[in-house]
Image 1 (tube, rainbow, N blue to C red):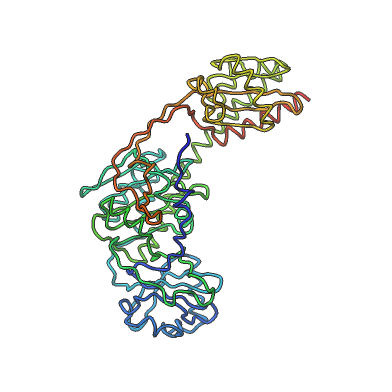
Image 2 (cartoon, rainbow, N blue to C red):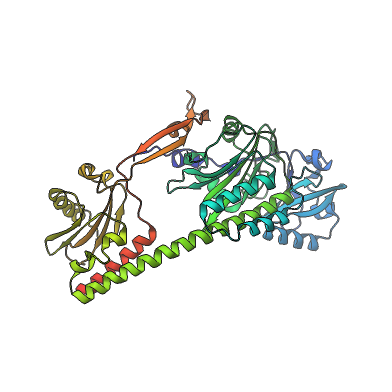
Length: 495
């Protein structure tokens, strides 16, 4: 269970939102917020609008567009809020624009409208996907439908959806591949592949596009934002440059073009849909905005299924808890209530064994560790001053002597039931031996050169097997809440 976590130790500390370069399939203009005077640009504006980047500094964007300032500001604020593509013309070039609002400036990402377009009608694609998903309520089936539909909509070589675990490792739960791309269904990728700061950016940006990993970046000019005296924050930008280590990662994956679409559940990043192409892959800003909408549709559908499943799970737990409480009331016995054949605490918490410490005695039910261990356990609980519901799914990791009992007691739930006595209900869960198929050795996810400064991603994604022992099924948040309600009831019942 002691794992190296490069997510927090290294990869999660890289400031990728202050990279200060962009991908060249569009250009960037940074404007002072009040008057829309251009204060910073990318160095590739001539390629997109025929105007040199140095000539643009100090010019007014609303004037260049040919719109009065108040109307232009209102349009920019509207599209920035809606995260939708705006259209205007500069120097005779028709453009798509994505506008982002900061405290003291606006950023406009611009792209000629004639750029390569993948889909004929993005909004209709969204509607079609909604219709296909409407009658499906199975999470695996929905994920398979989404992946298959996206490959067809995007005309792309490979699509895979992966779900994050509690340690932010991502396991591929559905995929559809062609054109020689490797299959990774069931494979787990370490958290450092999508490190902390990248995950935080996905909370701001539904879509991340890298059309061509061989691109030559364009710099921002001037390097420092004159208004903030710092690098411009490119967090919301689709054109934001890519860290060299990730471009090398794509090379090792044999991918040229890449697009990732986030999946959100309850405000948190639940998973990602990785869309990969064996050649360069370009889409317009308009399409990108449509795929952001598609991300919301997918997230809402997945969340609705998860919430429905959790509702059933919670309802069953509440019913079992109420049965236990009723039995305690009717029998006048805590022992009878929690160890009842009709609905025991083992059924409630999917445990195999339980012990009640009460009044200096032990009452055991089901498969529990030996008496000597149970004697030491109550001393350990007292020494740790466990006065709230406590859980672990790796008991051997915190109590060395628990290792010999891991087969029946790898997980532990402790419910303190007295305010002033060492009285507890303890439930044990058995070991679940888990074999993880890693996409490459997770302990070599990042490799440093001898100088300790230059680093590279792993160059092999060959399956690396790891067997995890002495762990149990983790305790669900709702199980912990139910345990707290039982604790509250018993504290009141015993008083």
